[in-house]
Picture: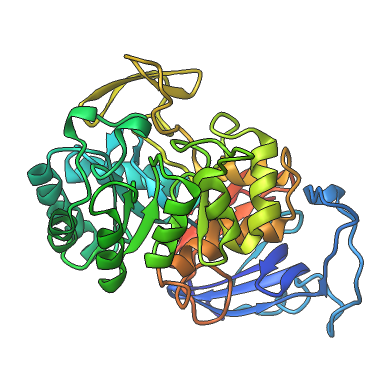
Length: 420
């Protein structure tokens, strides 16, 4: 019997399902969709550091009591891949990404943008929101129209405007000369220019027009994100009550946590309506800050992002971020003038591995933060963000040490696992 090329069975791996990790798991893909998932037995770990083969499994045998291979070995009607010793997790979803592979999502040609998207796909990001940086309003509106073409083709999941409606006190790697208050009419201009593909706008909501702009965004189904802000605790609470639901790269580009003036960090961490973005590259955050965010917000309210710029997946050198020059040295991006951190060179496979090893987070929590939570924020969880029948066949294969070994998007291998 001939093997059907569009039916693939990934068997024998540790599969992270919404119900938990299963040993000897199996994922069946037909065409672009997942059609079945199964596992030999539930897996559990003896401690918080779930590190591949070293983690001890307990739990009862499943109904079949198998490794997942026995059920498919006789199935000659499928392309069966033995992934014993590997992990299979949902494809990564990046809410906040400015570029990669030498390409800028703000200023590159559309072909260059596609190259940047491809770069991140090679690192496991199967769904990506293209982020812009502060620029002239007419330019940003024109750029939104161009990027919306890629959204209509399914290459990106939408557009995130980071700036120009941010605080000059916390501008980071944004041109101060181009910053402006969040006038609702101008916010609306960008949303309209995106032709229904605006997904998120980062605002310093304490600025004049900030609260009204949050309400406008909420009314139009666009995520209002608090970031690059100098807001007080009380001003942040007001913005959340008005409809803001995301903290743009929590801890970065905002006042630090104070014991008398707790500022935005405390308000964003404590409110169950807010998802907090974290850049887990070892540069933007101390491990204790990441642990605090997970402890206070919980895994269900964290979204790992890259905040990547052109140099991600490309290398050291001098780049442009909007009108500003950026030097990347040893993988860290900083403005040539002033030395502020200017985005990152992070890819999400690196963020995953760091979270599961250096930070010692449970794999299920990492999957929530890197796949499920951002998919839910984007309103796409019915299609992506978990390994469930009926969803897009977007998945990542990791080896026992959490290094990337394979990437599948909509049933096609972007990176095909090389297994014995």
